[in-house]
Length: 241
Length: 393
Image 1 (cartoon, each protein chain N blue to C red):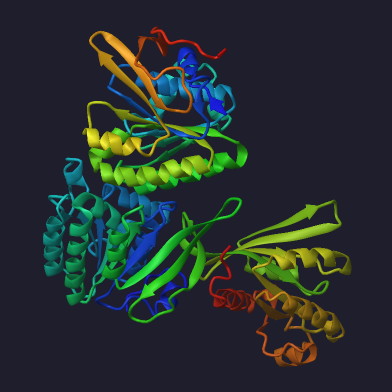
Image 2 (cartoon, rainbow over the protein chains, first blue to last red):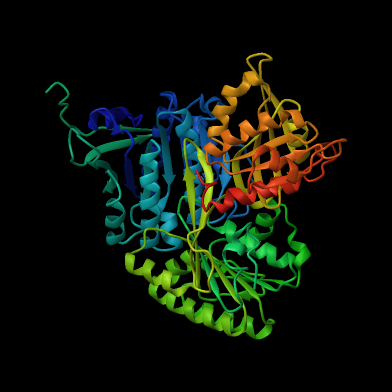
């Protein structure tokens, strides 16, 4: 069973999508389309009837809502149907006066206990009504910056395990350039796959590790367009083979 | 003794936490860890004690909000609640608190501040740390535990009590082993998951001052309200018109009569909130045609109340048969000798004699006036908990 990322040629590269109910690390430097992948992943999930949980450490839930409306015109309807839940780990810390029905606020990225409990209770709610759901965690980097990689590793051990048990297909984002290599390797160990993005001179490239069967594991060129990513690099389509 | 204020826990701890001792709430990562600590803190503030709240994972500004969610007003305790801020410096924010940990990554900084706190505060102060896991993650596991041992000793010398919230992340075995040695008492907190999340349970797993190790109790966290022992299903049965509905109404905060299949089946439902307990009560009609239902509900009951109209001698045969049925199920129960105000009401001894109740607990009530009803409820609640973890799951 595969779930679509919502980015056509990335799904082709993945031979249909990410294996359902797995954990994927999205590892990319800032400003080259990491968020575009996350938002399309959410949007395609909602269109396919899978509800979504956002865990946000770097922006408020209402900012994310606004951005999602730009990607999917039905987004507010989905949210009103109870298919979108936010765990906002940003607003209270910067003392924004935010309020909302579908949000749980956690006051600090150090409060991993509360983040975990909020994720688990939301997932339990979803798993009662839906076979599968999606989870976007943006980003692990903030958690590491506020404490250390070992503590975040333990946290992710618990969270990634629970996500699978309760039917979530999850993407955890991590910012390239912020961490020691050893930290990145440690976190990768907990994941079923990694989608990596990089900037090589003026070219932007993407590559897939793990994530089940894929067409190619090479770096593939892509271009960034408004709310979309277009893979322009060649990889052989082997569906017929 | 310093009480925890958590329902039944003090009893199982042999009265509470003795001065000089430390207690760890060893919490599964699947449930929130801070609830127990804040409950202990609030209970002792209410008791007029001096309390120190050491926060290391969220802003001290959140404390007031957390109190408010539980329905508590933090302003009442001004002058007795002292905050140690182990958070602000972590994120580079200024702090208005009385005591500030200047280097949250260094356990020595905690020790220094705790020394300062203890110099200024009276004896028998209650210290609540929220949380040990954050301190360990920030200061290094081994170093933190060594420092915490020294802090506990210092608190002990001043006759204080130290209580810690702790999330049992997948730490190494050797660390977990060390943690279990450092604290004088350990209470484990775990989720209870059935088809849905039923609640949580606490288990007394270590009490080096002598208590009831191994005791488990199911509870839920209520906002407002705090920690309450949760009893999922008390079934009220008894002959037709023995006063079951009146009884349920008299002990319940909320009451509904659930009609199903038209008028043939009517199950009454009430919620009791009393003495640290929260219980769901179900009443089954007494007529003979409902006996299959009695059978079904009775089987899954956590506890049973058998309500008897004390003035109806002629019904005692039926009561006796019901009692036999209940006993065969091994479910905790109490007999409610209701309508004690009616002429010709039999005494509790007489009823026991006639129905052959042996050493069963019987409580006299007048449900219409609310007399004795809470005593009956508490008697049953006690019986349910006597079975160790019989209210669990």
